Length: 359
Ligand code: IPM
Ligand code: MN
Image (cartoon, rainbow, N blue to C red; front, side, top):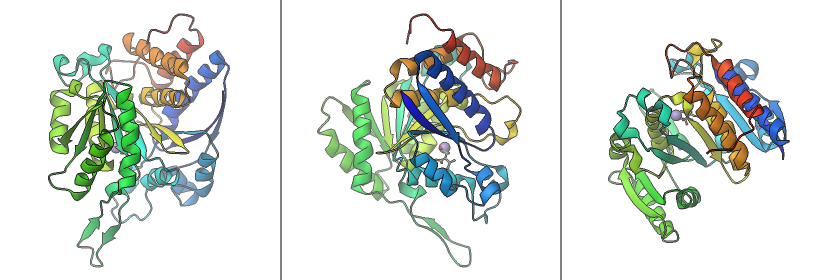
């Protein structure tokens, strides 16, 4: 298969971890005889430094002209403590999501057997956890009208959703549940928010066409508690933009490190793959960031194009790395392995693989 992949490595550790994902994809291309063409463009703080714009037009053009986008990370502390900053790196990612119409963000969370004892949660709680969050990504409070009063003493962010915005992601979430454990949980705040009541109404109606999938509802505060108390009860969680942002970071604790969590953001025409972690500026250039979330995002990219064996081989290489302790310090504080070393191990595993896929 021939794929043109736009590489938006972004800020902080973004370029380091993305380089390992590219190395992995190159190994896959060699073994399976695919042609992957990579082209890079700036986004985020690096793009602001270069052009004044966190999402330069050429970057968006490149993404639109590519089959997929491989995204690194975004954010720089110099903007975080400056509430008056008009231009922010995060706007680059948000505009990209909106510009490419990436309305569904898919974030799988699972407990790796070899890491269970590294989690801050007890083994008996997280064993068997394997769920996926379907987070709405181009609506809600992130994109509603923002206002700051003239005297700067009052501010508001509007949260709004249309039926159509809810329907399109709900169908994808139901289909995903159908191929998994057939359970969908809508997470909302329907006891308080009008938008949540609309979500319940629309999702309940759509559920009638997916009779093989059981549908239940949880208020987000209770969901936050259930994810920690009994995460293995979940299969597919469907939720709006901001709730999804929050519970996915919470869920990352189950896997042992946020450095393991990958995501896919899909729309009707484009797809973007990125680790859920941020730019971790303190680690920039130190070769200590965990590249696995980025590498697993590359596996989700392959899966998206129907390259199942290729994606499985990456998953298997990652499991092997975890099994033998070929991990960065977030997973083992005594580890002497760095970002590059872990990436090299995974690429070598793929290049020299001649066994059976066990996943
Ligand atoms: C994420 C991030 C982004 C978000 C930020 C960087 C804008 O936290 O992808 O989860 O809030 O969506
Ligand atoms: Mn987030």
